[in-house]
Image: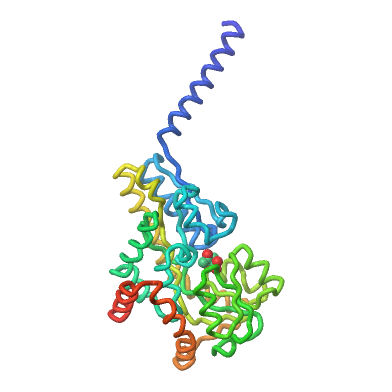
Length: 336
Ligand code: X2X
Protein backbone atom coordinates (compact mmCIF):
# COMPACT_ATOMS: atom_id res chain seq x y z
CA UNK A 1 0.00 0.00 0.00
CA UNK A 2 1.37 3.40 -0.93
CA UNK A 3 1.72 6.22 1.49
CA UNK A 4 -1.03 8.20 -0.27
CA UNK A 5 -3.50 5.38 0.11
CA UNK A 6 -2.57 5.08 3.75
CA UNK A 7 -3.23 8.74 4.21
CA UNK A 8 -6.56 8.72 2.44
CA UNK A 9 -7.68 5.75 4.53
CA UNK A 10 -6.73 7.60 7.66
CA UNK A 11 -8.56 10.67 6.41
CA UNK A 12 -11.64 8.59 5.63
CA UNK A 13 -11.51 7.10 9.09
CA UNK A 14 -11.45 10.54 10.62
CA UNK A 15 -14.28 11.76 8.43
CA UNK A 16 -16.26 8.68 9.39
CA UNK A 17 -15.70 9.33 13.08
CA UNK A 18 -16.71 12.96 12.64
CA UNK A 19 -19.84 11.88 10.83
CA UNK A 20 -20.75 9.48 13.62
CA UNK A 21 -20.27 12.22 16.22
CA UNK A 22 -22.45 14.52 14.18
CA UNK A 23 -25.22 11.95 13.88
CA UNK A 24 -25.04 11.21 17.60
CA UNK A 25 -25.23 14.88 18.52
CA UNK A 26 -28.11 15.41 16.12
CA UNK A 27 -30.09 12.84 18.08
CA UNK A 28 -28.97 13.70 21.60
CA UNK A 29 -30.19 17.01 22.96
CA UNK A 30 -28.65 19.22 25.59
CA UNK A 31 -30.64 21.84 27.49
CA UNK A 32 -29.10 24.78 29.34
CA UNK A 33 -30.05 25.14 33.01
CA UNK A 34 -29.46 28.40 34.87
CA UNK A 35 -28.82 28.65 38.62
CA UNK A 36 -27.72 31.54 40.80
CA UNK A 37 -25.54 29.50 43.15
CA UNK A 38 -22.92 26.91 42.15
CA UNK A 39 -22.68 23.30 43.24
CA UNK A 40 -20.76 24.37 46.34
CA UNK A 41 -24.30 25.13 47.61
CA UNK A 42 -27.38 22.85 47.87
CA UNK A 43 -29.03 24.98 45.17
CA UNK A 44 -26.34 24.18 42.58
CA UNK A 45 -26.27 20.57 43.75
CA UNK A 46 -30.00 20.34 43.05
CA UNK A 47 -29.40 21.23 39.40
CA UNK A 48 -26.45 18.85 39.10
CA UNK A 49 -28.55 16.06 40.59
CA UNK A 50 -31.27 16.78 38.03
CA UNK A 51 -28.68 16.57 35.23
CA UNK A 52 -27.24 13.33 36.60
CA UNK A 53 -30.63 11.63 36.93
CA UNK A 54 -31.78 12.74 33.49
CA UNK A 55 -28.61 11.61 31.74
CA UNK A 56 -28.98 8.19 33.36
CA UNK A 57 -32.72 7.91 32.68
CA UNK A 58 -32.49 9.01 29.05
CA UNK A 59 -29.38 6.98 28.28
CA UNK A 60 -27.63 10.23 27.33
CA UNK A 61 -30.26 11.21 24.73
CA UNK A 62 -31.52 14.20 26.72
CA UNK A 63 -28.99 15.99 28.91
CA UNK A 64 -28.69 19.17 30.94
CA UNK A 65 -25.75 21.54 31.19
CA UNK A 66 -25.79 23.68 34.32
CA UNK A 67 -24.64 27.30 34.09
CA UNK A 68 -24.20 28.59 37.67
CA UNK A 69 -23.67 32.12 39.04
CA UNK A 70 -26.49 33.53 36.88
CA UNK A 71 -23.84 33.72 34.13
CA UNK A 72 -26.41 33.40 31.33
CA UNK A 73 -27.88 36.73 32.47
CA UNK A 74 -24.53 38.33 33.37
CA UNK A 75 -25.21 37.98 37.08
CA UNK A 76 -28.55 39.78 36.93
CA UNK A 77 -30.61 37.10 38.64
CA UNK A 78 -33.92 38.95 38.36
CA UNK A 79 -33.67 38.62 34.56
CA UNK A 80 -33.48 34.83 34.62
CA UNK A 81 -37.22 34.26 34.20
CA UNK A 82 -37.49 36.63 31.23
CA UNK A 83 -34.40 35.10 29.64
CA UNK A 84 -36.02 31.69 29.87
CA UNK A 85 -39.23 33.01 28.40
CA UNK A 86 -37.42 34.62 25.46
CA UNK A 87 -35.55 31.41 24.67
CA UNK A 88 -32.09 32.54 25.82
CA UNK A 89 -32.16 29.91 28.55
CA UNK A 90 -33.87 26.51 28.20
CA UNK A 91 -34.44 25.71 31.86
CA UNK A 92 -33.60 26.82 35.38
CA UNK A 93 -33.64 25.93 39.02
CA UNK A 94 -34.66 29.37 40.20
CA UNK A 95 -35.60 31.21 43.36
CA UNK A 96 -39.17 32.40 43.93
CA UNK A 97 -37.64 35.75 44.97
CA UNK A 98 -35.74 36.24 41.73
CA UNK A 99 -38.76 35.37 39.58
CA UNK A 100 -41.27 37.45 41.59
CA UNK A 101 -40.80 40.63 39.52
CA UNK A 102 -42.34 38.70 36.58
CA UNK A 103 -44.67 36.44 38.60
CA UNK A 104 -46.24 38.58 41.38
CA UNK A 105 -47.90 35.50 42.94
CA UNK A 106 -44.43 34.31 43.99
CA UNK A 107 -44.29 37.14 46.51
CA UNK A 108 -46.42 34.86 48.66
CA UNK A 109 -43.25 33.20 49.93
CA UNK A 110 -41.52 36.52 50.69
CA UNK A 111 -44.29 37.87 52.94
CA UNK A 112 -42.51 38.43 56.25
CA UNK A 113 -43.38 35.97 59.04
CA UNK A 114 -46.17 34.34 57.02
CA UNK A 115 -44.86 30.79 56.44
CA UNK A 116 -43.20 30.06 59.78
CA UNK A 117 -41.80 26.52 59.57
CA UNK A 118 -41.02 23.65 57.20
CA UNK A 119 -44.41 22.00 57.84
CA UNK A 120 -46.03 25.22 56.65
CA UNK A 121 -43.76 25.36 53.59
CA UNK A 122 -44.77 21.82 52.63
CA UNK A 123 -48.46 22.47 53.33
CA UNK A 124 -48.32 25.42 50.94
CA UNK A 125 -46.20 23.96 48.13
CA UNK A 126 -47.78 20.50 48.18
CA UNK A 127 -51.41 21.63 48.25
CA UNK A 128 -53.84 23.84 46.38
CA UNK A 129 -51.73 26.96 46.96
CA UNK A 130 -48.76 25.27 45.30
CA UNK A 131 -50.92 24.38 42.32
CA UNK A 132 -52.11 27.97 42.00
CA UNK A 133 -48.50 29.16 42.08
CA UNK A 134 -47.52 26.66 39.37
CA UNK A 135 -50.49 27.82 37.25
CA UNK A 136 -49.34 31.42 37.65
CA UNK A 137 -45.86 30.48 36.41
CA UNK A 138 -47.33 28.48 33.50
CA UNK A 139 -49.53 31.43 32.47
CA UNK A 140 -46.34 33.41 31.94
CA UNK A 141 -44.78 31.00 29.50
CA UNK A 142 -42.73 28.74 31.76
CA UNK A 143 -43.52 25.13 32.63
CA UNK A 144 -42.88 24.50 36.35
CA UNK A 145 -41.86 20.93 37.15
CA UNK A 146 -40.87 20.60 40.80
CA UNK A 147 -40.01 22.36 44.06
CA UNK A 148 -36.62 22.70 45.74
CA UNK A 149 -35.51 24.85 48.66
CA UNK A 150 -32.92 27.54 49.26
CA UNK A 151 -34.10 27.67 52.87
CA UNK A 152 -35.30 29.96 55.65
CA UNK A 153 -33.58 33.31 55.38
CA UNK A 154 -31.81 34.71 58.45
CA UNK A 155 -30.53 38.22 58.98
CA UNK A 156 -26.88 39.03 59.66
CA UNK A 157 -24.98 42.26 60.20
CA UNK A 158 -21.65 43.66 61.28
CA UNK A 159 -22.66 46.02 64.06
CA UNK A 160 -24.50 44.16 66.82
CA UNK A 161 -27.10 41.57 67.84
CA UNK A 162 -30.62 42.03 66.42
CA UNK A 163 -33.48 40.97 68.69
CA UNK A 164 -35.95 43.82 68.11
CA UNK A 165 -36.99 45.96 65.14
CA UNK A 166 -35.20 48.93 66.78
CA UNK A 167 -31.90 47.08 66.38
CA UNK A 168 -32.31 47.39 62.61
CA UNK A 169 -32.76 51.15 62.79
CA UNK A 170 -30.62 52.82 60.17
CA UNK A 171 -28.72 49.67 59.20
CA UNK A 172 -27.92 49.44 55.52
CA UNK A 173 -29.17 46.00 54.48
CA UNK A 174 -28.48 44.39 51.12
CA UNK A 175 -31.69 42.92 49.78
CA UNK A 176 -32.53 40.97 46.64
CA UNK A 177 -33.87 42.92 43.67
CA UNK A 178 -37.53 42.42 44.45
CA UNK A 179 -39.66 45.39 45.60
CA UNK A 180 -41.34 43.55 48.50
CA UNK A 181 -38.00 43.38 50.33
CA UNK A 182 -37.68 47.11 50.11
CA UNK A 183 -41.02 47.39 51.94
CA UNK A 184 -40.19 44.81 54.61
CA UNK A 185 -36.91 46.39 55.60
CA UNK A 186 -38.25 49.92 55.37
CA UNK A 187 -41.09 48.85 57.72
CA UNK A 188 -38.45 47.62 60.15
CA UNK A 189 -36.69 50.98 60.09
CA UNK A 190 -33.66 49.72 58.18
CA UNK A 191 -32.15 51.21 55.06
CA UNK A 192 -32.58 48.51 52.38
CA UNK A 193 -30.51 48.55 49.24
CA UNK A 194 -31.21 46.25 46.30
CA UNK A 195 -28.39 44.43 44.57
CA UNK A 196 -27.61 41.11 42.94
CA UNK A 197 -25.77 38.36 44.77
CA UNK A 198 -22.73 39.06 42.58
CA UNK A 199 -22.59 42.61 43.89
CA UNK A 200 -23.52 41.70 47.47
CA UNK A 201 -20.24 40.09 48.46
CA UNK A 202 -18.00 43.04 47.50
CA UNK A 203 -20.52 45.42 49.15
CA UNK A 204 -20.27 43.44 52.40
CA UNK A 205 -16.48 43.29 52.16
CA UNK A 206 -16.03 47.04 51.76
CA UNK A 207 -18.66 47.83 54.39
CA UNK A 208 -20.84 49.59 51.81
CA UNK A 209 -23.67 47.66 53.47
CA UNK A 210 -23.97 46.60 57.13
CA UNK A 211 -26.04 43.47 56.69
CA UNK A 212 -27.69 40.90 54.47
CA UNK A 213 -30.22 38.08 54.71
CA UNK A 214 -29.77 34.56 53.33
CA UNK A 215 -30.25 30.94 54.39
CA UNK A 216 -27.69 29.35 56.74
CA UNK A 217 -26.32 27.23 53.87
CA UNK A 218 -25.44 30.37 51.91
CA UNK A 219 -23.94 32.09 54.97
CA UNK A 220 -21.90 28.97 55.70
CA UNK A 221 -20.62 28.09 52.22
CA UNK A 222 -19.96 31.68 51.09
CA UNK A 223 -18.16 32.33 54.42
CA UNK A 224 -20.16 35.47 55.07
CA UNK A 225 -18.53 35.61 58.53
CA UNK A 226 -15.24 36.44 56.78
CA UNK A 227 -16.69 39.65 55.38
CA UNK A 228 -17.42 41.06 58.82
CA UNK A 229 -20.90 39.62 59.41
CA UNK A 230 -20.42 38.75 63.08
CA UNK A 231 -24.06 38.77 64.20
CA UNK A 232 -26.80 36.50 62.95
CA UNK A 233 -30.43 36.32 64.08
CA UNK A 234 -32.43 33.17 63.41
CA UNK A 235 -35.80 34.74 62.81
CA UNK A 236 -37.08 32.41 60.01
CA UNK A 237 -38.83 35.42 58.53
CA UNK A 238 -39.36 33.75 55.15
CA UNK A 239 -38.54 30.60 53.24
CA UNK A 240 -37.16 30.74 49.73
CA UNK A 241 -38.40 27.76 47.73
CA UNK A 242 -36.73 26.93 44.42
CA UNK A 243 -38.63 25.97 41.30
CA UNK A 244 -37.36 23.57 38.64
CA UNK A 245 -38.74 24.78 35.33
CA UNK A 246 -38.34 24.71 31.58
CA UNK A 247 -39.44 27.15 28.89
CA UNK A 248 -42.69 26.26 27.17
CA UNK A 249 -41.03 26.34 23.73
CA UNK A 250 -38.61 23.66 24.85
CA UNK A 251 -41.34 21.73 26.67
CA UNK A 252 -43.51 21.68 23.56
CA UNK A 253 -40.65 20.33 21.46
CA UNK A 254 -40.15 17.27 23.67
CA UNK A 255 -41.84 13.92 23.19
CA UNK A 256 -44.30 12.81 25.90
CA UNK A 257 -41.67 10.30 27.12
CA UNK A 258 -39.06 13.04 27.38
CA UNK A 259 -41.49 15.32 29.20
CA UNK A 260 -42.17 12.60 31.75
CA UNK A 261 -38.45 11.96 32.25
CA UNK A 262 -37.72 15.66 32.66
CA UNK A 263 -40.51 16.16 35.20
CA UNK A 264 -39.85 13.00 37.21
CA UNK A 265 -36.11 13.63 37.47
CA UNK A 266 -36.79 17.24 38.56
CA UNK A 267 -39.16 15.96 41.26
CA UNK A 268 -36.60 13.42 42.48
CA UNK A 269 -33.77 15.96 42.51
CA UNK A 270 -35.99 18.49 44.30
CA UNK A 271 -37.09 16.06 47.01
CA UNK A 272 -33.47 14.99 47.48
CA UNK A 273 -32.25 18.59 47.81
CA UNK A 274 -35.03 19.68 50.18
CA UNK A 275 -34.30 16.77 52.53
CA UNK A 276 -30.56 17.44 52.41
CA UNK A 277 -30.91 21.18 53.04
CA UNK A 278 -33.10 20.59 56.08
CA UNK A 279 -30.87 17.84 57.47
CA UNK A 280 -27.79 20.04 57.20
CA UNK A 281 -29.34 23.02 59.03
CA UNK A 282 -28.06 22.12 62.51
CA UNK A 283 -24.51 21.32 61.36
CA UNK A 284 -24.42 24.60 59.49
CA UNK A 285 -25.52 26.49 62.57
CA UNK A 286 -22.86 24.76 64.67
CA UNK A 287 -20.17 25.56 62.08
CA UNK A 288 -21.20 29.21 61.98
CA UNK A 289 -21.16 29.49 65.78
CA UNK A 290 -17.78 27.79 65.94
CA UNK A 291 -16.34 30.51 63.75
CA UNK A 292 -17.27 33.06 66.38
CA UNK A 293 -20.51 34.42 64.93
CA UNK A 294 -22.93 35.54 67.66
CA UNK A 295 -26.24 33.80 66.95
CA UNK A 296 -29.41 35.35 68.39
CA UNK A 297 -32.64 33.38 68.85
CA UNK A 298 -35.93 35.19 69.45
CA UNK A 299 -38.38 34.44 72.24
CA UNK A 300 -42.12 34.58 71.52
CA UNK A 301 -42.52 38.25 72.50
CA UNK A 302 -39.52 39.35 70.45
CA UNK A 303 -40.81 37.41 67.45
CA UNK A 304 -44.25 39.04 67.80
CA UNK A 305 -42.68 42.50 67.73
CA UNK A 306 -41.25 41.71 64.28
CA UNK A 307 -44.59 40.30 63.12
CA UNK A 308 -46.41 43.47 64.14
CA UNK A 309 -43.80 45.79 62.66
CA UNK A 310 -44.24 44.17 59.24
CA UNK A 311 -48.05 43.77 59.07
CA UNK A 312 -48.27 46.70 56.65
CA UNK A 313 -46.32 44.65 54.09
CA UNK A 314 -49.06 41.96 54.12
CA UNK A 315 -51.74 44.60 53.67
CA UNK A 316 -49.95 46.14 50.72
CA UNK A 317 -49.00 42.91 48.96
CA UNK A 318 -51.99 40.59 49.53
CA UNK A 319 -53.93 41.99 46.56
CA UNK A 320 -50.92 41.71 44.23
CA UNK A 321 -50.41 38.10 45.28
CA UNK A 322 -54.11 37.42 44.77
CA UNK A 323 -56.92 36.73 47.22
CA UNK A 324 -57.55 33.12 46.21
CA UNK A 325 -53.90 32.24 46.59
CA UNK A 326 -53.63 34.06 49.94
CA UNK A 327 -56.69 32.15 51.21
CA UNK A 328 -55.44 28.78 49.99
CA UNK A 329 -52.03 29.38 51.59
CA UNK A 330 -53.51 30.60 54.87
CA UNK A 331 -55.79 27.59 55.23
CA UNK A 332 -52.95 25.20 54.36
CA UNK A 333 -50.81 26.82 57.08
CA UNK A 334 -53.64 26.73 59.63
CA UNK A 335 -54.39 23.06 58.91
CA UNK A 336 -50.76 21.85 59.03
O1 X2X B 1 -29.28 36.72 46.05
C1 X2X B 1 -29.51 35.99 47.02
O2 X2X B 1 -29.53 36.42 48.18
C2 X2X B 1 -29.79 34.53 46.78
C3 X2X B 1 -28.51 33.86 46.31
O3 X2X B 1 -30.21 33.92 47.96
C4 X2X B 1 -30.86 34.44 45.74
O4 X2X B 1 -30.62 34.27 44.58
C5 X2X B 1 -32.25 34.63 46.17
